Amino acid sequence: MANFLTSSPIIQDLVLPFLLVFLLVFAILQKSKIFGEGKKQIDALISFVIAGLFLAFSKYVSWLKDFSIVLVVSIFIIFIFLLIWGFVWGDSSGDSLKDAKGLKWVIGIIFLIIIVVAALNITGYIDVIKTSSSLISNIIFIVLIIGAIAVVLNSGKKEDKK
Image (cartoon, rainbow, N blue to C red; front, side, top):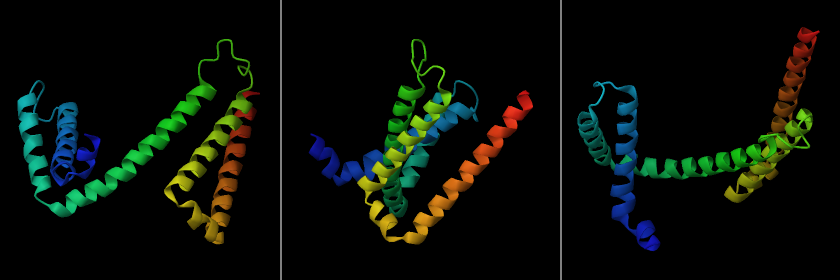
């Protein structure tokens, strides 16, 4: 069954893009209440027409399919980061790290770096970074700038408390 869903051009080129566009437009219309409150039929009809028009342009359907892959991978990476972040920063009742806020930040940043490196490795972009020495130096420079800004902002907060 799963093989049918991934190999069928009807599912890939018609059904899934139609459902995605229809549901996104319907959700936006429902949330914004452009046509009034309780007008689900009008919102559904307009969403149906927009999704149908979207399918008429195959160039945009292929663009949506390509972009969806990036979107799904990004959502998965964010999910993993939030899962680990919740593990580190979760409810601190009975937590031995309750008073060690600095240690929690260090652990969170280490996990973020691990997730970024793992995502780059899985997607194959780690080879691009390894071969580009200027990219590595730029990344290190940006991290140092962010660190310096964080130190300055943090020291300003401590002085305000005194």
